[in-house]
Image (spheres, rainbow, N blue to C red):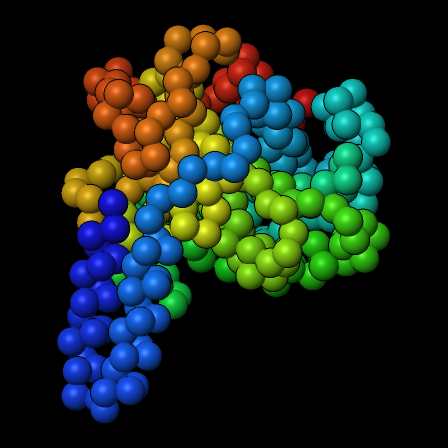
Length: 300
């Protein structure tokens, strides 16, 4: 699954053949190392349904108003996570992008809101792609990536300050729907900002965020990702996968085909034809998007 990345690297190699031999050898060796580094890696931690439910509830909490999150006063907050501390809210008024981070059980959890409201829908349907920085050939969804950039500096500052309160904390990133897409970009940045901190990612009903080159790059950096999909949920099939060079999911999919108790661990391609990709497009429905693990997608 590294052909797209190899093609980009071959183009780079062709541009340096006129350099002197020592420089050519150094660069060629470096590029070959990158090729092998971009092969898919298996997760180092297994999928856990209990963990999945826990972080889904954190994801749904992002649907609350910023003031409710800041005071940690929602019903789910006090009922399920009463010991969570230091909530910090990240908000971009122009696009209604909301995220937050909180300290819970020696973990700093970064969470991003799913799709609600007219402005978010406009961002969702903006299927244009742009180059992803510093990864040749990688393209990403313009609207999703710009939404991440809208809150990026806030997230970096907030989590940096939370590490001052909890220097031994690990990191967890989660989000539902569009929040899952933003979580994908956040994960890669957190790996750069805090390279020595254990990091795990669970998303729910995430749309596709980039092409196959981006998906391979993401998996090479963060194999500890579980991308949960529910039955015939419409959103994971957007934007459409017209070709492998258009949009392609990041691994690793966990598909619940029938109910909240049985699931399938899909292959590491990101687009396992025996998982949610096997659903007849005529049967896609938004209703499966709004209730993961039997929990309603709203602020409670």
